[in-house]
Length: 125
Image (cartoon, rainbow, N blue to C red; front, side, top):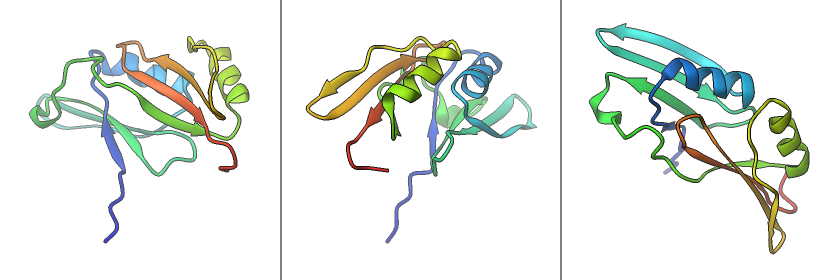
């Protein structure tokens, strides 16, 4: 049995602000922005090279979480120094690179306070 993680809800207060941050600053691809009816809006975004997307949603009670409450999503990169510099150059406030015994990390927050971590794993491409 395969179990593929392909979609993670990210709780935000302002979908348009978050969509701009993730597409323009972090570089995620916009997969769709739909309003299927009533108060429902679904925005799906995918990090470059990832098989897993995020969803920003409103009007869906099953995905309701306090804005900014998601912690520690990891984006694995081949070169953390280059990835950190690219994001910082786009205006993403990045934390310092930390070496934790050969595995390196650098963190950032989205405008709502959801936290993300870049991670470099030696020998992984």
